[in-house]
Length: 127
Length: 170
Length: 176
Image (tube, rainbow over all chains, first blue to last red; front, side, top):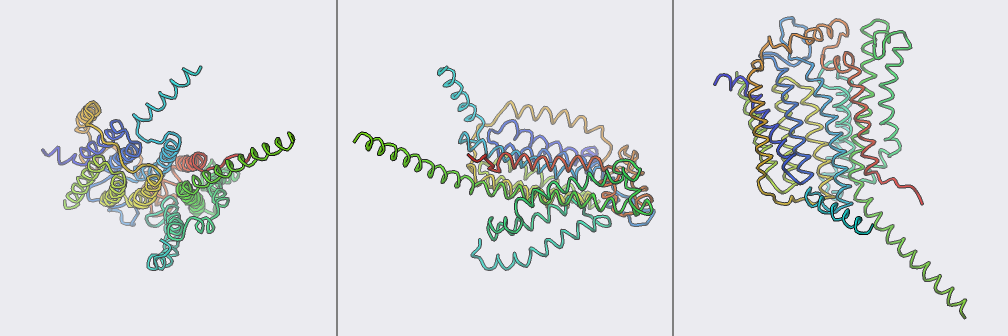
C-alpha cells in the first residue's frame, strides 16, 4: 500500500501512456490518433519531470542560499525542448491528414484502405 | 469576428502587452523562468491573435511570408554562427567562454545570442504553421476558382476552333 | 505533504480527461479536452517544480497545438465513425501496463533526494551554473550552454518541421 502511494505518479503515468497507446492502435480516425499521440507524449514528459522532483525542494533557480534543495534541472531541459519539437512534428502530422482528406475524401483508416485497394485493383485490371 | 467591438478593442490592447511580455520572457530567461522557446511561442501567439481577429490577409500584411521564411532561417543561422564565432576565437564549437572579456561575460553573451536565435526561429515557425493551416481553405477555394476559369477557357478555345473550321468549309 | 495531495489529485484529473478524450466521437470536443489536458498538465508541472516546462506546456500545448488541431478540423470531417470496442488493442495495452507496473515497483520512491538521477550530473550543473556561468536559472544555462549541441539539434528539427508543413500545405505549385 505504501508502495502504491510512493509510486502514485508513476502508476498514473503508465495509465495515461496506455490510454494514449490504445487510442493510437485501436482508433481508425487519424485526428483521434494524433490526440492519442499527444497524450502518450505528455505521459512521457510527466514521467521525466516526476523523476526530477525532490521532496521539499524548489524550482532550479538559484537563490544564493546554500541550504536550499533544488529539483533536478536536467529532465526539465530535455522536456522543454521535447514539447516544442513535439508540437512541430504534430503539425506535420495534421498537415498530412489534411492532404490525405483532400486526395481520398476520408480520414478513417479502414475506408482509406478500401479506396486504395479498389484503385489498385482497377489499375491491375486495366493493365 | 471583425464586427465584434469588444473583441477588437480588447485585442488591440492585448497584442502589444503580449509582445512585450514575450520580450521580457526572452531576455529575462537568465534570471527567471523563460527563454527562447517560451518567448517564441508567446510572440507568435500575438500574431496568431491578430490574424484571428482582423483576418488572415491583414495578418499576412503585418508579417509577410517572405520575411517569415527569412526569420526562420536567420534564427538557426544565428545559433550556428555563434558556435563558429567561438571556434574562430580559438575555443571549441559553442564554447562561449572566449566571446567576452571574462569567461562569465562570454557565457552571458553566448547564451543571449543563442536564445535569441531559438526565439526567432520558434516564433516565425509557429506563425508560419498557423498561416499555412489557416490559409489552406482560401487556397482550396482559389484552386477551385482557377479550375472553373480554366474549363471556361478551354470551352472558349474549342468554340473558336469550331467556328474557324466552319468558316474554312464555307 | 499537502503538495503531494495536490499532485496526486491533478494527475488523477489528467487521467480522467485523457480517458474521456478518447471515448468521445465528436472531434471538436476531443480537441478541446486535449487543450484542457495540456492546461492541467502545465499546472502539474508547476507543482513538480518545473516552472520552465510548465510555461512551455501552457503556451504550446494549450495554445498553438489546440489552434492547429482546430484549423485541421475546419478542413476535415469533425465526427468520428463509431467503432466497436477493440479487444486485441485493449488486451495489448493492459499487458504492457502490467509489465510497466512491475518495472515501476523497482524505481526509487517519488521525491527521494538520494535517487541515482540526482547524484549523477545534476550537482555539477547546479554548482557550475553559479560559478562558471553566473546565471541563476540553471535550466537556461544547461539548455543553452552545457547542452548547446542538443538545443541546436532541436532548433533544426523545428526548422525542418516548418519546411515540411510548408511543402505539404503551402500550395506552391510551378507556374505553367
